[in-house]
Length: 335
Image (cartoon, rainbow, N blue to C red; front, side, top):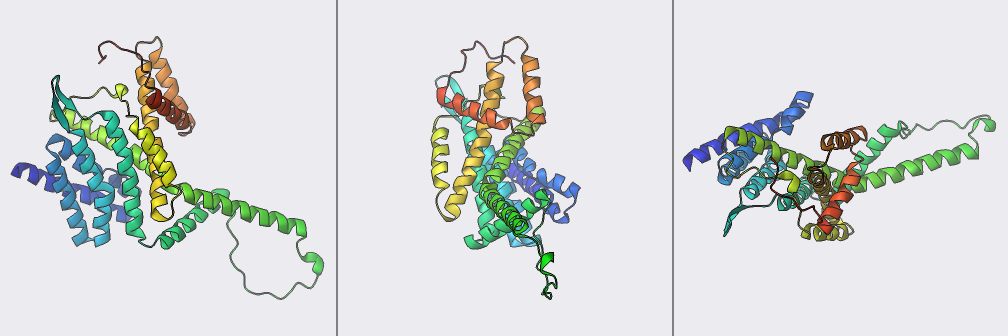
């Protein structure tokens, strides 16, 4: 017990250091920040969830005392507690007549989606407890991004000038109408982007949390300390209750205030894990087929070339796979 506690404290200090270097704002600092959840996940999967909880508490308290309270709370909400929770779920098991049954990877995917959405909403509330301030910040960010992408920034206000001497120098009505239409289109685009920002952020975080959990488990497995057998990932099947959770998230997204933001974030996070479900189903259904390697290579090439747009097709495939549950019957699982 004491050994696990010491390891947890050490992992928490390393994770807090990786998180804190983000303040430097360099490319290397961002790269190190992205590795911050790994120490907590590794100690949680390799030793115990109590060690991971000690790591989460240590890192949060150190950042609160050394930098500022907000940094410690942000670390706890966005990095530490999600990592501890996923490590805890991954090592859950129960005794059955057939032997020890580990927590299914499909249910774990569903919890990854919920954890990502809750982590996002926690950061949003910590940053802006006032919802009106949150909306103002998001609108400002969205307009700045849209203007950057379109390359047509809104003109800055000019000082009063004397009227033009020649009336013919003023722009005609058609030019004014075109400029007004451009401004309206740009504003609508910025408003739409501000609406889906929580979904995009939670979608990306769900993907990252899945990768972190997989990478930490691989590292712990190489060390020989992984307590559960390596699961057959292509056989991953999310429960149908996740479809109900997605439907409820869609309804919640129409609610006012932070409740609606949480609904949008849940929709984005669940679409991410359903895309991963579709990826697993493709791997599973292609097993034993001729040319499987070529099919998988082509799929990943399409994902790379389309910059993730093909994830929409995988998401639909994952939704259908979960709803219909028509996996081909298989014999013994291949290595």
